[in-house]
Amino acid sequence: MRLKITSLLATAALALSACGSSTDECLDATGQGGALAAAEAAAAAEACVPGTVADFVDNVGDRVFFDFDKSAVRADGLDTLQRQAAWLNTYGNYVVTINGHCDKRGTVEYNLALGERRANAAKEKLVAFGVDPARIKVVSYGKNHPIVEQDGSEWAYQQNRVAITVLD
Amino acid sequence: MLKKCVFTFLALLSLTLGAAAELRIDVTEGTFKPVPIAITPFDGGGDPALAKVAEDITQVVRNDLESCGLFKVVDPNAHIQSARDVMTHPRFPDWKILNAEALVGGLLKRNGSNFQVDFRLFDVFTESQLTGLSLGTEPENWRRVAHKIADEIYERITGDKGYFDTRIVYVAVSNPDSATNVKYRLAIMDQDGENHQYLSSGNTDVGTPRVSPCGTKVAYVDYGLHKKDLPSLRVFDLNSGRSESIGTVDGQRMSPRFSPNGDHIILSSSKGGATSLYKMDLGSKKLERLTSSTAAIDVSPCYNPEGTQLVYCSDRGGKPQIYVKPAGGGEGSRISFGQGAYYTPVWSPRGDLIAFTRQNGGTFYIGVMRPDGSGERMIDSGYLVEGPTWSPNGREVLYVCQDSSRGKKGLCSIDIVGFNKRKLNIPDQAHEVTW
Image 1: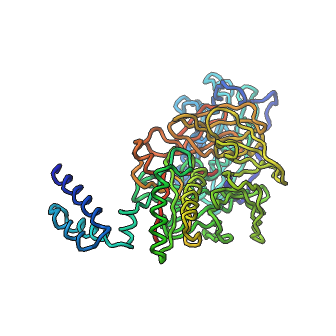
Image 2: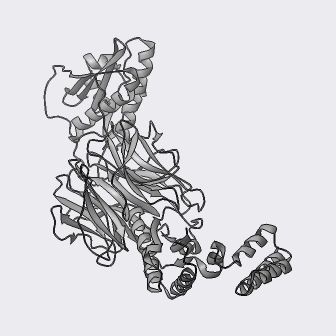
Image 3: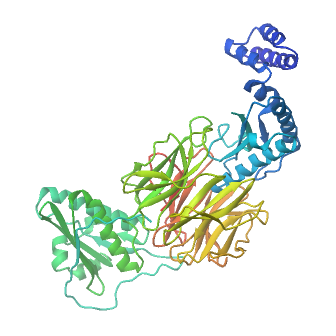
């Protein structure tokens, strides 16, 4: 099992590095992995097609994380949003919805408002980086729709304090 | 508050007995001893079908009175007189020996296709009748008749309105912690958990339900298809079983709450990172903005019973706190000053207290304070306790409760003095609740 994971990671790294150049190289790269299941290979292949949803999610990064009870975009989030804006400015055919989420340590109603504020904070940065605001919708799910299983772990809390940019 | 009328008739029964200073309890102190009450098994008059109804009614009356924490039901095995005898010639000295302070008897009889229950409540020490009623109804309403009887006993002894013949609306949730199959449904049940019924299918998510003052409508938010639709504000009519959209959505609207006279709702709407309070006329659907910060979250608005003031949660000072403002306009003043954050304020139907959720460190609290912020005290705490709603008489609060991160999200109620915490029996888990 350990061997498989190592080879999968190596393949992903290859795929990523190859992506910028051409799809063919990507397919070659996944072929070299050997241990990848067919579906994973297909997904990895798609991630290498520039301008696709998979390309955006895997290579640009669709999510921006926040600190507890905060909606200020952190430095790491700013990098992600800068990449998102550059991508969206390249592929002008997409409109997006930014979904705001919160961890479960809060009340339903305030978290709905906080999720909206987080999603809006991400939107404002995208607009500042040149994306037309008319292309961006904002929806909050508060603590109602976890992104990962809320098992009470610190990691799960962190994963659920997020604004996710979804290509429509 | 949810109530509806089913009774064909209701009459006062009287029995001439001596009058004296009567049984009365006053529950304003922290320590309180429940009143021992003997509820004799109601008599079906020799009719087998009525005997079963009589037994069921007796059980519900006992459950109601014991569940509220103000009464202690005297062991029926110790009873020394039948209900039929109690109705006509209660032997008070014998009941005194059992330490019963209150005594109840009841008789059922047929009345065409309906039935009639006569019941009497006695004060054992003064040897007097406190109340007596005759209630008639269709057989399928036996449970509501039982709640009515419990309400009458409760009111006669405590001086407060009973709340047993009421219903609760809540958001039922399946798999709340799951990332893939969480499901929200609007549900309704009697206050004791009976007659549970789902009002929505779960195809779309729903949230923040509130019942209208007359108890026939529920305002709520339908979030639409997950990741497809924008939320819409809707009103569910409990009589017709139908739901209709009110107004269009511009920004994320939530927490609708009816005004005391029911002609408009107040709500929150989020746009551009700020959440403000609005008022929507239910006739014209015209929206009027009530708070105007461009950065703050103002959420969870609730009127006082007179409709002259609003209480709400705002983080305009940094952390979420509770504010009160005049309904006619003007600035809000902060009333919460303890450590941590305060959320979901709700004004008691009596007007004297505001219940809220407080979070400090890793602990949640349900608390109450007076509308000027004084007299704050916590009445429950835990891993998660949130979103209080008042019993119609302002005596209890009901809220969502969870013991641990992996624990089930249930519904708990507690007396405002902080005793008699109970967990309701519900088929799934609970996300939000309104009484």
